Image (cartoon, rainbow, N blue to C red; front, side, top):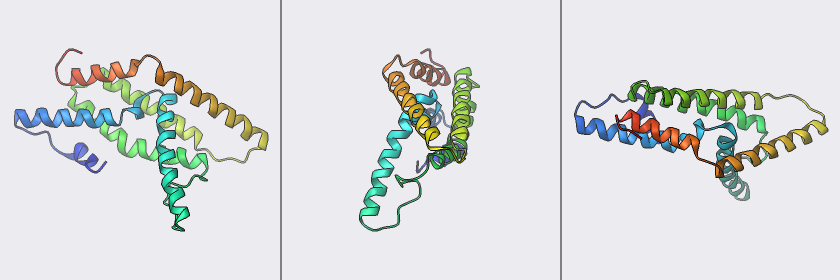
Length: 178
């Protein structure tokens, strides 16, 4: 993420070879962040794995009697996870895809990625709503979340349709056939 803003704000190189290298590096950046533009169950599975890594860091900080870093507290409300995802997707991934769209000559596949991103932002927005619920509703939500995770696992191991679309998108952006 250290060079993320460079991809968003830097000018396209004039030199043909530098331009190709820039576009290839940009494609790798988009591919690296691609779980954000996959179906929500798949994206959510990736977020769960990332959050577990963050929570382990928070657990270590707690054991060392340090202040737990924001976003790394295992005891945070799920609504907080939703809020942080909405911010991350809106501030980092949205602009990245807008720039990729410009570099890929308006590819319809990038538009599909943007559509999926907006769906994920919408889903996280709904999940970030905070309201008091009776305990039985919390249990129902837990069951629904577990079903969502199971669905994500099934999609992770199913046919990689979006992966093919993304590969096709990158190839199209470089004027190649996928």
